[in-house]
Image 1 (tube, one colour):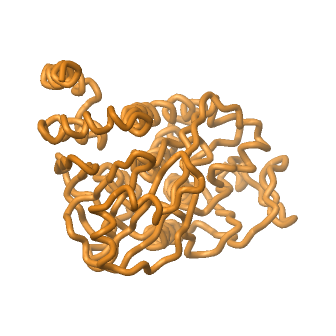
Image 2 (image 1 turned 180 degrees about the vertical axis):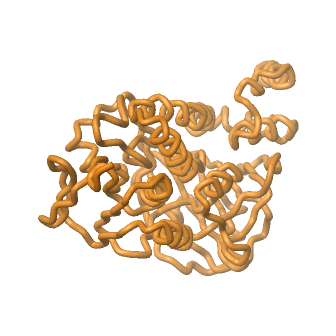
Length: 370
């Protein structure tokens, strides 16, 4: 195999790009990562890793040290009237600050010989590789992991969208001890607010809505219980915002270019599965490379998107109908075992068909006749 055939350029040094770099390097490729930023890279993020995310990370050879982050045992849903929680059926989740996770991924990539080109601007596809700041990087394969607004995706002609919905997220950290061993999702009439413990003395609080002008302070007015609790702490980071996009593209691979992470499509942040998808896509890429047929990446990528998209659609039904939201949360609070079933499916511990159990159908009939 020639040097060029062994060289890959990954455009984007965030978690998705580094995950792809790890599997490429351990498959025997020489990998160069190009990014316009420098370490550590932060971004608006809920910062919660579900058990399936941690399992995928382990598959990449990355473990979160016991002293980093904060372990949580499950998920709690709440609104002004009801509350329901369930434990993960298999393992714990963990809240981890984005820069810490990024540094762990980079440490693994660097240990495998991945070469970085940080602070690189003007990145373009060229014949036989990539140009960054006018410097040619020869590569037989280019992985575009340069985010939602991927310029490499556009240059490669892979930006045909099958479907897309947009929402907006804003995140801030508070210095205070977590009051719960659960990651919480507080439902309001206009937004959802995530609370993720990320340290023994720190919380990540993120609001998601359809309103680009809705900030966390205003959203907290509609979540009085949460607002009261947070008043006991103090903000320790600026409010950082970003888009939450549900999007799927026609193709994620063509020729010697393939897409990864948000550049390849995404699910709404309400699922908490964005990171997990990026890690699973990298592991899928590794399997595809071993077959020698990159075209398989398109179908495998689509299969990975199916469950998060379905769960996102179910949850967003509640987001768009306040009356339905209140009734469903009250029903789940009365039948927490149903909520546990949803959570097990959501984190991949149970197949989606389990949602069609007789127990759930009975719950649906009771709900519709209430």
